[in-house]
Image 1: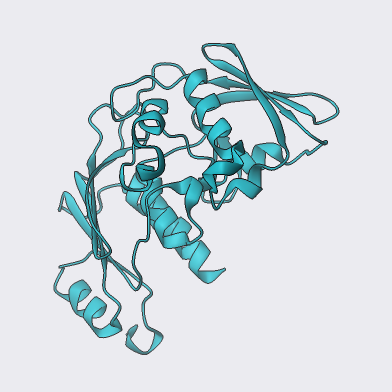
Image 2 (image 1 turned 60 degrees about the horizontal axis):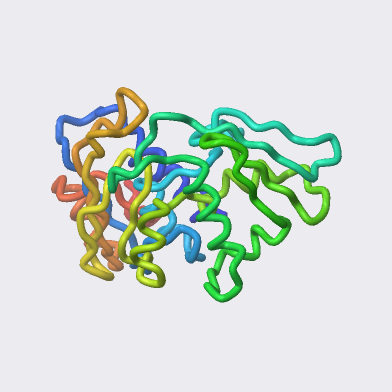
Length: 246
């Protein structure tokens, strides 16, 4: 749980830093490696943290773990909690220049529903029976059984939306070719040690992000992470060893 909360805090810092320091390039030193960049096929929180700089879902959680709309603007649920109609945000583009719309949402959840893809997070979406396009910015999800917490599931990082074009283009190699709608866009991943994203100039939300680039480095040795923080080689480290906190 500690790692999960720290991961959530780090993701918030990376995406919405208010620019409290002068540098426009931020380096984060972590104790473990990033293992992949497909949020629908990841089980570890640090890798999911990296993907959250680039990807977004229909809903999300704020710092108080309250649900708020992101790529959806609202949702209508049937009284029996079997049908959920999502109204999508217009004017959003993926980092490959393709539009975010109902087609892209449908492509993502059909990918998750396909057992041949063997995605690690597919089980989260087992309640989903079908997804239908109502119009270019409206989709209806029908469940197998009533499930009142379905919108909470949509706020999970694994419900992040890939560009439909990237799903078709990269297939099983999507893990190394992230294309989302987030505040940062993918630049490089020298696996497993160094991952870098740069500011998305076409991000749909005005005023963020506040920094130009983020580099995440794997630094397993605690003393080295501390030294990087002390010399300003890194501006954020996790975890902070208790014995070195002073």
